[in-house]
Image (cartoon, rainbow, N blue to C red; front, side, top):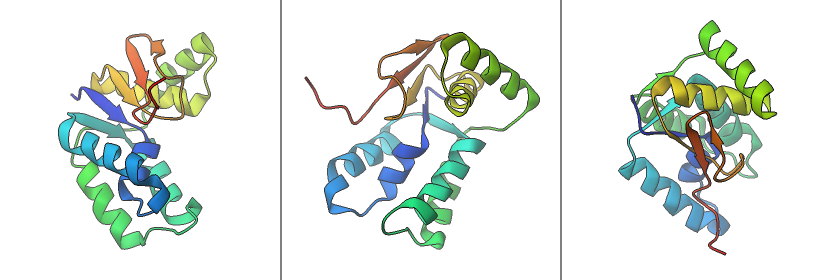
Length: 139
């Protein structure tokens, strides 16, 4: 069980050394230190790909592996037929991308009421799972 699920963008910012991402890096690291979190197999894979292949300056694979080993020590929702079915239902009900629906379904499986992500609708509730963008600027 976990109170929140951290999406891949949060994990990638936690590893980033880019000067322009300092505020996001600090917030991501604060979440890792203070929140009872879990994640999913999908998020671990997305983080690996983003950090080692998609960043302007990729993070060394050894650093990403060590970081994700620590993250994977927390509760992890695995890709099961049940999780897939739940994701398909969420995608159909809310019109969200199937991969986002899989993250929401993983959060529900972990008992998490919050998904921290900058890629989904901030403040939206999906069947008891609320998305919070931890990097939003106050208006």
